[in-house]
Amino acid sequence: MENIDVSDEFTFDKEKEIARSFSKRFQWEMLVIGVGQALIWLSLWPLVIYDYISLLLASSIAIICACFAYLPSHEAQHGNFSRGNPKRRWIDSFVSHFTLITIMFPHDLMRCTHMKHHAYTNNPEKDPDYDTASAKSLWEVIVRTQEGTTKYQRVAEVYKDDPAFMKSFNKGMLVGMLYRSVLLVLVVIFPLETLFLWWLPSKIGVIYLSTFFSWYPHYQTDIGRYKDTRFWSHWMPRFFNHSMQLHFIHHLHPGIGHYDEPKAIEALKPFLIARKVPGAEDIPERVKFNPLIKL
Amino acid sequence: MNKFNELLTNHISHWNMVWFGLIFWGSIFNALALNFGFDKNPSFFYIIGFLFGLLAKLRGTWLWKT
Image 1: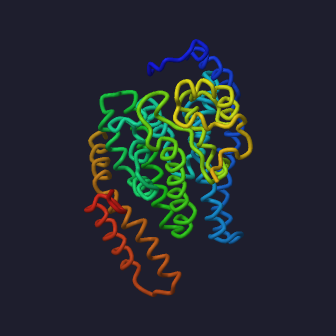
Image 2: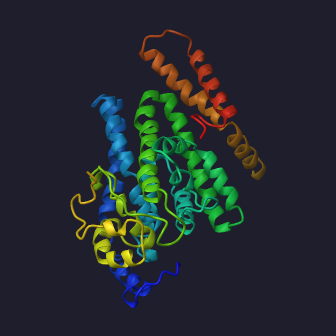
Image 3: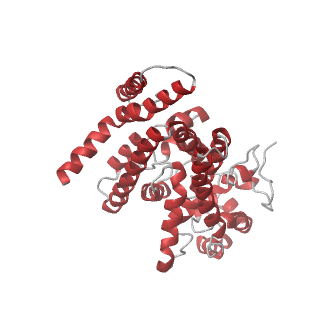
């Protein structure tokens, strides 16, 4: 942790105590979104195959589903459903595996690489998301997200001596291979449906994800607990980009549930300013509706 | 069994783009051709898919290099 001179009023212990009060609630909204979008996405297949709706309409819905697919898994990766209760851990696992079907991401691979992203944010060698976070333009983000498995081979090389990481990684790669096999079987039977309901939406979903979850929040930021993520504003209402303007609070306290972040930020704003979090002075007093739009 | 898994993983990591081109893009090109009324032998489109994948393998990427 950086040695910034802060008064006794803004100590880390006090910050943690406030953050903890927002880290208790069961994230039911995320459960509904995760399971809901995956069910909608699955239902598109018979609806298109039996000609109840057009492929174009179904593809548009699938793209929206894909954009909603990651965040519930992200909550699960941090154990924000089970909240440390071993009996509820299955909810984390179930929600994450199920919601990620839409974007063909394996839960175990996402979880182990995301934990390393938190541990080494913005480290060029060790942060698995550094490729997109360090992109200089949106175009670069798009190109880099399409790299596919090559990126993960590189990440595995960095962490090859970390047995816990490699165990999750290899498990994730197996599920990834299973996804690939299912895709290749489906494309032979239902070629255009597979292209427009799964492949294309997953690509668009991953670009959306990398842009708003990885690129914007870490754009041109430094290394260090209070420096690696920033507060930013955008022309797009925050509900359309999953409120990722507030992503820095997640990096400081990952246990805070996504829908509790606005309240947590309001409570922690003086701490964030004292710790010089990039953009903290611009945080509005009340984070409600769309105060984060830059016009 | 371990030896088989190792061989399979090794093969997939080296040739996945070519297989993907052949099966995925081959099927897509063939379906699009049928949709637009091209009456050609399906193997023609699978060969294009295969070449597409082979090119991606040689370049190391499907898209542009950064």
